[in-house]
Length: 408
Image 1: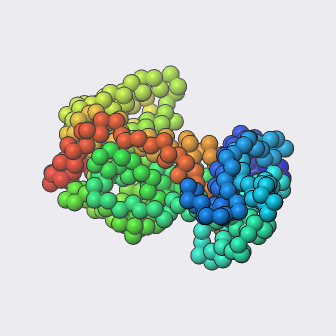
Image 2: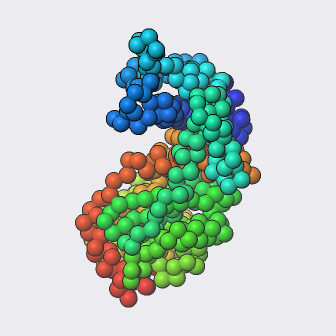
């Protein structure tokens, strides 16, 4: 099965050449991981638990050897576990793994992966995921292993625990999936500096209802700010996102993303002014406290005043939200993490490598959610604590101060 055929069958009808290459990489990585897991499951069924073999067991683990499967007409190297079986004649023979043989048939392999991706985790499709549970290594058993692993990979994101008592900040940003579909993704920052991709909601745009649906689910999963603290929300600039945050946390402090605002202002200015604009925003990003923040803000305003009226109006629209963090009087060492949604934009780059530049998704199915769940979990693997996380106690203290209510 060619990658283009697979693209059509999972609902990605039109995709660029760059997107097709990205999708191919995604499929190859997903296949390699799933192959390893399902072969390990079959070995477990044949031999029992590792390091605890049953006395007199006929089958036993015999190490591993290099193997391969065919994908897109090319050999893809995998590690093949080996199993041997004792015969009545006191000899041993190699046991052929049904999962490995199935994986060597590109039609069967991609068919199983396709079904896993299509199946998702919706309640009405759980029976399909269970498959035939008859012991053994029949084709139906192999299929069950593949489908179960697909469920595990793509269902993990929504089922994991996000409840903790020290969340300080919530970042919200949008990821364009192509066409009219957009995913609003939420990332949390805790008091110890750890980051976590919390959840997402897919809709036609960053409208208030989509954002409220996301925040409602976060609350249902027990996401809440640290005790006695207002929530710091860092948003990409959408009024709908701010409305949704205020609806759930009325006292939230709202910081507008400086990167998005600078990017937006560039649209109004000739390229010859972009360098100076970047320097002014860099000054704002480095400013310590409210006084320095306001001075940097006035410098940007003066620069835009004689350049473009629409740019100036766009700048005024953001208003005090551009210096909400400055007004908290927290160390400027935290500015790099809190003055933009870069902490969530950077994982998006990894997500785009996983899902490709899709031009149309099947909104009537849960297909976008399934792909995005897997991609976000993969992107999160490289997360570290934010820079200068040792200064976060000062942010927590500032969010507890009564006067910080005016900062948002």
